[in-house]
Image 1 (cartoon, rainbow, N blue to C red):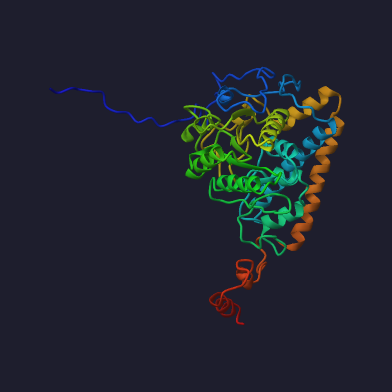
Image 2 (cartoon, helix red, strand yellow):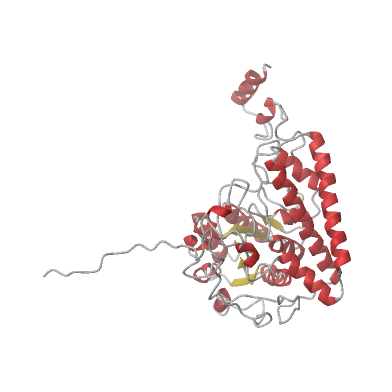
Length: 412
């Protein structure tokens, strides 16, 4: 007996709007600020399942804070957070232009995502270990890492602390709890979980925090890390920064069309939280909650930061080829700097005069750092690193065959 059936049809996710279209956020709904209850840190992962599908919000779009998640933060800390965000944006702008001027080969901005790294850096302890992806330069800036040193690394000049061995923007600072950034997607997540397991095993008090993009959750390393984090109750925070776009493909390609990225935690028994990543107060609050849970030996937390990549993926990317040009300005959850500015103004703790002064101070700080770094050299300068340096800092005791290669290379 022959049966006729409909032909199979492969589904390929596609964004709602393309270049030339109007930005389309129709049908998007969010909980109101203050509507989401704040659970106790010892709540079970099962009890927290619904948090994967909502959105924790504290600030409304007029700058007013409400709800149980509204953290108790001193106005001075909020002002410091705003200044760090302004400094990060000014730094990004200068380095982006430096790449266009041929002073470096590559750069990646965090434009529109500054609250994710800076609010978290201020909520964590300064000795907690960070395992970042390549858009968390705000962590170093919030930990007062020298901008000149960051620029030296970007320029790969003679004062580059990693001696030209890393792609620009892939910083590293053990002293500042900033693990070396890797260009291989998601490798930092199992490293963070392993570090956290070692911290717990040794009776330390420090926790780990890792960041990755939503597209990287499709990598096997992410899923292996989730298994270990869940099984061993590692004191780690795993942050998925859902900025809607990978280099040219929207978040639906990584599974965001079917469910939230916070829902990745449900299957692993890891408490999931989904937060408005452009709401500085909400990001700070959920980070505090997850850190307190980890320090109480209650295990990991998965946080999805729902935000928007307002700029290009990198200097190698042209977003006008795959999304509407004004989509960033139409983002329904606003800009993180503008929203924290409005909150401080509503509190009576900030003014337009102070804001303009802070912007000018950020620009001048970046300009001064740029002048100092460029005195040392930029990418186009020949022989910033002697050929023999490629053999350094690899082995504690260099094996004989590398000694011979080094001598042959430098004529020794």
